[in-house]
Length: 325
Image 1 (spheres, rainbow, N blue to C red):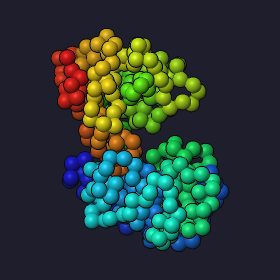
Image 2 (image 1 turned 45 degrees about the horizontal axis):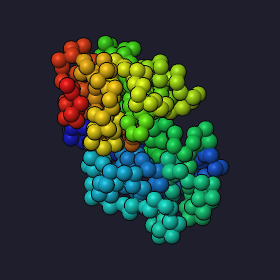
Image 3 (image 1 turned 30 degrees about the vertical axis):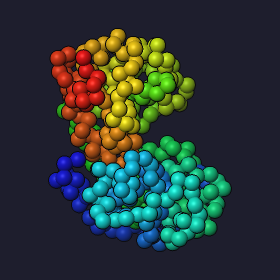
Image 4 (image 1 turned 90 degrees about the horizontal axis):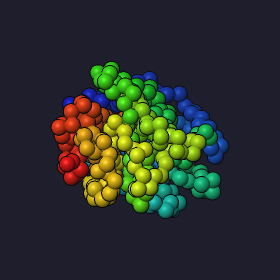
């Protein structure tokens, strides 16, 4: 996100509003947690939790390091919000001693993978807020997580304002590009198999907000409620969408280049491919007020080029990854 936009967003999110009433009660998959007062010292065990706190001007005293190897686990879109903060990186294998030493007032764990046993032990240290009962450890929607974290730190109104601003950006972009309505987008990750995200995946839903749809063949092949479906590299017909987004957590596109049947895809022949690479895929994965602004700033120009109907148009990310003819 360009710096002026980021500064404006941070100013909006950190503008004081009426303090939320405490106590706050949180019902979740492990029971019920009550925060008697606004916490000052926050530990987030959610792998993407720090972004949500930083968006509200709150620097956790402890945070989980998802991936990426950035100082203090702050990716490019979150570094300005982190400022000179230096949260402790909590061990991936949860250490109760390490967390207790941080003397937290609350432990947020909505996207953390903790078990009932770990919840019980962590609750001896501080109140723990886990994922709501209708969600698993890994599928709390980004906006629910953002607003719940807003409640935790007494900033629900600010959190709701940030979510509304991002959703309005999606709506405005969709309105500016009526030609995108109904176009298919296949979001594809390549490993030993070719994984394609179904319409249930949070990233597919983001494309849906812009007017795109998941190829019917992908959803048809998936089990009910599945987030992705695997296809053999010898059968890529289901991913030959209007646009293919090659989703990669690394900047190396060799696995995609080595797909023998990729040359037969019309999307490849006509230059309708986008490559995410490490940072853009990370921004998608964090799915926060901060990171989604970054996604839209960088993705929308690429979508416009990939969907312009001219096979001669070069999509910069695909060209940089060596995916163009």
